[in-house]
Length: 165
Image 1: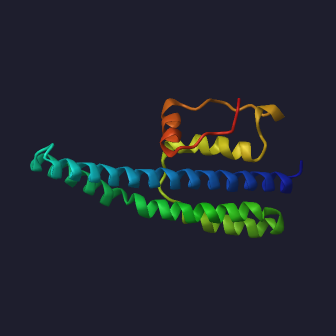
Image 2: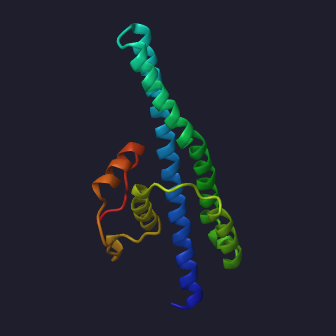
C-alpha cells in the first residue's frame, strides 16, 4: 500500500469516526436536555399537587436550571447534529473529491467540533470500524471491549453498536 492510499484510508477513518462521534454527541446532549426538562416538569407537578414543599422544589428547580444554563445541552445538541450531517455528506462523497479537498473540508469541520464526552470516544471508534468493514469477521482485532461507563453512555443515548468481537 503506497503512502497516498494510506493517507486516504486514514482520512476516511477519521471522517467516519468524527461522524459517529458527533452523532453520539447529538444524541447525548439531546437526551440530557430532555431529561432536565422532564425533571423540571415532575418537580412542578409535585409542587402543584402538594407532594413536596415549595422550598425543596424551588431548590431542585434552581439546581436544574443552573445545570441547563451551564451545559447548554440543547445548543450543543443542534451543533453536533449539524456537524454530524456535514461529516456524513463528506464521507458519502469521499471518492468524488480530490484528497486535498477532503483534507481541507475535514480540517474546516474539525474547527467546529464540540466539547468532548470521553465515554463516547471508544464507541464512536468501534462504530467507525464497523462502518468501514474492519470487524473481526474480516480479520481485524480490536484491542479492548467497552467499559461499563461507555456501555452506560450508549444505553443513555439509545444506541447499540454493530461491532462484534
